[in-house]
Structure formats: structure tokens, C-alpha cells
Amino acid sequence: MPDMQRSDLTPRQYWDEVKSNPRRARFGFGEKAGLINIDLQRAYTDVDRFATAYRTDPNQIAYINRLAELARGKNMPVIWTYVAYMDNADDAGVWGTRTNTEDSLQNIAEHSERAELDPRLDVDRERDAVVNKRMASVFHDSLIPSLLVWHKVDTVILTGGSTSGCVRASAVAALSHGYRTVVPEECVADKHEIPHFANLCDIMLKYGDVEPFMAVEAWLAEHPGCTPIRAARGAPF
Image 1 (cartoon, one colour):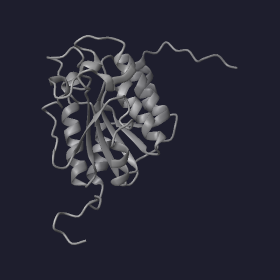
Image 2 (cartoon, helix red, strand yellow):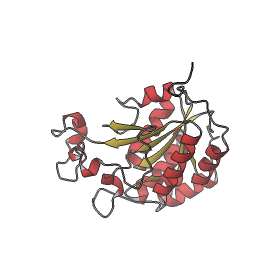
Image 3 (cartoon, one colour):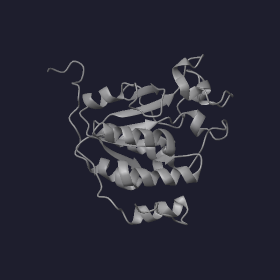
């Protein structure tokens, strides 16, 4: 059995190598996408207020807003998730047992500042779904799988954070559920560059396509649009 490959490359250099020399064919886009924006809440985006927040690309929020605008215009579902727990954190399960500080995951309480979606986000509360998730994957014990089936999507576009946590877990689950998975590189973020770039490599090599924001924007902009899934109120069947 050959030994594990070794390298002196940094994760950033390895990502640049993987990105410039893809080792696998892309899964590609399908016919209809669902845009899932993961945990873009103040606990993870408000770097001036919370120690748990982080920023990778300074234009992340603007890019995500653009994708959401385009997806709505093509009658594709837009979903925003946030993580928040009961006051006693019972619904965090074993995930909430490692630490117990004001910054700990299980102490993000429903309706708290840390649970609030970033105010810079353009969330259409009349059309978009806003989903409280409690574990890493957006697919775990949430209504998102049903939403994707209802909207007849075959592709998921994942944004948000963290790249090494909930984005990666959701990418693995999306593939396991049979979806083509696309991650716009500039639209995901992590606390440190090592897990960020290492996990972009893993996603690209195994679970989905990591694409430049401009490529995802172009696909949505050029898409002919989808038939609305539900007739407008008052419209005949």
C-alpha cells in the first residue's frame, strides 16, 4: 500500500493548485437551483460585536444579495438559515457540551442578537424561507429537503459559513440527497484560512463544484427562468 502523499504546500497554495488543475469533471448546473444561504447571522458576520464572527471576502454579503435577487427573478427558491437554541440548549444535544461561555454555540438563543440575520442582507420575508437549523447540515431535521422537493430543484447553491463546518456538512448532505452542489468561492467564509482553503479543496475534489461568484451570477442571469411553482392568488388553475 503506498504511503500518504506529503506536501510542503500551504492550504492556500494547495487550493490554488486544485483550482487551476481540476482533477475531476465538474458536476455542473442542472435545470433549476435552490439558493441556500447558511447562518449569515450576527454571531458569525458582525465582526465588530461578536468574537465568533469572521470575514473572508469583504464583498460576501453584496455577492449573496445579488444571487438572491437573480434567483427570485428566475422563480428559484431562496432559503436563509440561522442557528439558535432553546434557553436550556436541550436542542443542541451533544454539540452543546464542549464549552459553556457567552460565545458558545449552544448559547445562541432564539430571538437574541446573535441569532439575528445580518441587517445588510436583502431578505424577502414574503417569498424567501427563513429556517432555524440546529446542526451542521442544512438537511438535518429541517424542512429544507421538503422545500427542495416541492420546488423541483436539482441543484443547490450554498453560501455562508463556515466553509469547514456547516457549508461542508451541507455540501456532503446535498450530494448524498442527489443534488448537484455549487459553492461560489467568494460567498463562503471561515474563521481561519487553513480550514477555509482545505475544505474548499475537499468540496471541489469530492462533493461539489466550487465556482467563482461571476460564473454563478452569469448562470443565473442567463437562465431562461422557471415556471412559478404556485399559481398567484386569485389565478385560475
